Length: 311
Length: 281
Image (cartoon, rainbow over all chains, first blue to last red; front, side, top):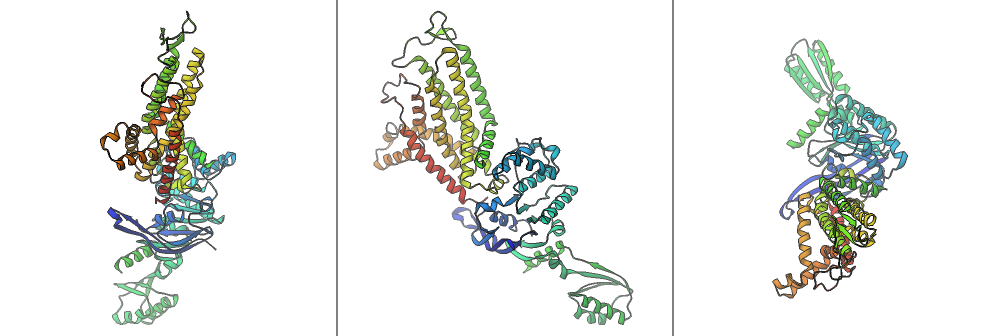
């Protein structure tokens, strides 16, 4: 079941004299996010990731297309009742303490009284700011502000969480804690929409990802789908391959690179790999070592972006 | 509750501004000085003294001397709050629209109109708190030391606060359109002069160019914008009558400037809200 469903969402910014300068931030973005998954939206700077999330929350108005969030059309206030948002570079009133900040934003979501105070206390403990709750946030570090932002986004116990660069400025231990928290939220049935340029982190926790570039979706799929065709094997042989052997191998492989005794191959299936090994053995070539080189999401991402640039 | 949270935060933000703190400090000094300076003559209990000197023992024209002093205090505090108040809170609308802040507010289940009006109400309330504090302080001094409990004086400040709320619609609109605190402050001050000029348009501006279209334009502008000068003038008339200027036709309180300003400021707030609703952040 989809909790976010978009169809041909477009956003064009016009500026300058007579609004003649046009920037297409998003062009026909269609995707769906399933309930209970962590969905990563990836893209280089300026790809339109933040604009897309802002459109879902009606902070930015789309130029075209349609979307539903939690079953409601864009602009419906109930979307914001059921969602939490951690924007990039968020700023809080510096004269408030951490606890006061959460109480204020909790009040804006309609919470009140002891339930709100208890919830704020629990969240501050969850994000590791319990000892800082009475300190004015102007004294908080970037990482602490990010943790506070996450607590703020979780105040109303949202079904859908939009996080824009949630680990920005957070130390490695804190990042691990945030990843664990997000995983735990997923296990509670929450849906998490993650905007990030930290591909390794997205790869670790996302169920599915979409790659966005210049306002267009280049690819959507699971991490495995995005990287499976990229599995490569590096073989170290006892001697260099002759041209005739290479020609025998080529039809069975997606790619083949020879560098002296080193052979790097990529195959669409296991059959291709095994056929390669059979051919090598039949030619009397000994394999000294074989290592799997699984292409990371980052490799796939860069490959996609570069292909898009050259297209 | 949601609106109240935003109003309370804005009040807190407003009263923490240095300019309002300065106004608060000056207000306290004036209250303390009045408490020290005002007294009843020990020889004649009907005689009010100021720094041990008799305070205007006779009426000035048809004006009661106490009313005269209170009107002066009310006018000076109302004028200065326009200066300090606008300077202090004009930035509250653009600061709400800053990147990183506005996204947080707009992601909460609060409509943009409610958000904007809560912010404007909070800004006005921050200024009003200062004004009311000063008014109550002076009122208590006159009551406790002179046994004069002048309710009209207190009531007049309520109208100054209302005038500020109407006046703030201009600041809100400019803040929304330009997203600049500096521009909002500058425009607010320009509007103060503009409003005074429009108030006396028949005597001064009409004389500049004897043209019906020009005169009509001035009239339209007068009725389509908050009538700041007229509202302030009328708020002080609640206290009593002034002996001058002698050619003043009427010195009785007139509610019409408030009614016109209510309508015009409601339209300006609606326009600001419409503009805010259209904007992307």
